[in-house]
Length: 387
Ligand code: MLT
Image (cartoon, rainbow, N blue to C red):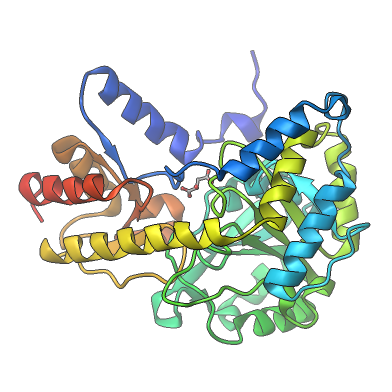
């Protein structure tokens, strides 16, 4: 049987491979602590679940949904963007549902790339910034995020021959995997750069409200001119513990949102109406549940940072996301340290190199397990791994 080259050469998704390793160990009776995938361990807020149940009981949601999205969903997204970010979105043509940000990342590549075109992909960055372009018969060019620039790219250092082929640029702040946030005029510089180089900005805003120490993350679309050059991929996964629900939205430039809608009408039949109503309840309801969750994560962040320091692994506490981006001990590669920690301590961390070549020398630890497991994981590393 002949598999198409784009899939034959496609590696399994990073966490699919890690999940297999975890399953094998658990099947062997090994107690594994996973600080790998960023999958919230806390429950979806009750009022969101109640809205799902009510929506599911409404026969109107049992038929095909529309890829345009129910008006209630689009109005809730527009209201959230106005209140939370100060961004005005027209529900009629600037908002379309996504089945999670991940599909948005993969499919926007099919909207923007012709064969051989380039996507500039933040490096380190979410793996689909690279596999998405490949699945669109395009290519990804790594855009190193420099620690000395607060894990921002040096836009002026991008070679002209790369820019000639580039059609789009993936960035994400708060940033997965580094935890970096924007506290300067980077988005304004990015809008100007996109205009000059005829690039589309795709801002992956999956961690918008997972922030700490009083920091409040901006939307890219709050930047003057942003809606003329790009879109934002918004997700409810992390803010409302809804990774399993697959609920998000692509918002911003009307032409791009419409093109995305046209593609999606040919790919799937949209988001289950009851999930749309649950998402609307999350976005239009009290946001205290998000603030409480961030308090939990900030406590876990500080606990893990301090525990790692006691074993000689130093990392600055991030102001955003659910991740610590930790330099590996001297003498290790990111893959080598990841494997040693798994084999000797039965703890899962994510190798930084899996996020791109600039991730080498780091591992990523998620804050998605309770305090006692975070402490146990570090104790095991201290006792069983040569640091
Ligand atoms: C991550 O851990 O980077 C993400 O939560 C995984 C995903 O979105 O698939």
